[in-house]
Amino acid sequence: MARPGMRTVWDAAAVSEEVERYVGARATGRSELESLFGRLGGDPRKGTCVEVGCGFGRMTAALAERFDRVLALDVSPAMLDAARAAVSAPNVEFLVISGERLDGVEDAAADTLVSYLVLQHLPTRGTILGQLAEFGRVLAPGGQAFVQLPVLRPGVHPRLWRFARAAAVPFVSLLSRRLTSRPEYRGYRLTEVELAGGLARAGLRVAARDEAEPSPYRFSREVFLRLERA
Image (cartoon, rainbow, N blue to C red; front, side, top):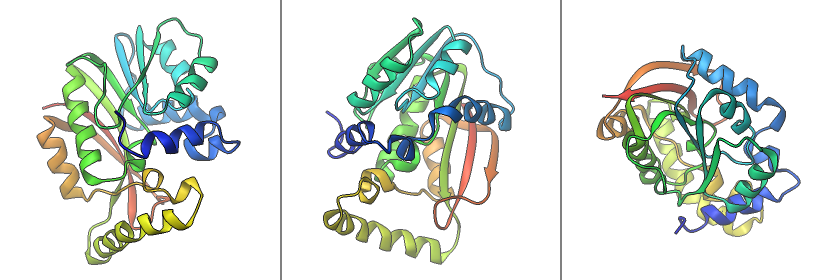
């Protein structure tokens, strides 16, 4: 089963007239994918690609042109319905996942894994660290994972802000009907120490890293990682 709330939020986003506000513009999916690979010194092709959080398929068609097989995963059946309608490539397989695991993906199956604009929405530290562990599980020897996520800046103020935010968000979501108020949209930010520990436990090492300023997330920086099995 999907984590409570995650499927509800992203199913609602999928049928919203503002879906591109929630998951990114369809028109820029290809260029954002090329930017992700390029900034990390990668140009992966061939083999199997696992796309974590494919949404309505804005990057999926471009991935299908690069790889022999694409497993496009999402927690939302409604998002996957939209992706199937948008992407007709025969080498793409769409899979519903729980949000806790990459359900249906075998161990060491991914020559390439892509996670972009996804981890920033996961609602708890444990959920994010669990996804990193899953990345390590499904990544093949010699494979590469291209991952984007916001990381909390060091210092007392960012940690205090994160604590206060985590306490406030559930109450705010009760008072507002907006999807952007829900914990499953607003997400959680790891610290650098938490990220490093999660990668180590997942059996992953950082082969390349880049950062972007400014981040749209308060007290955070946008981090881009190319990961390999340690």
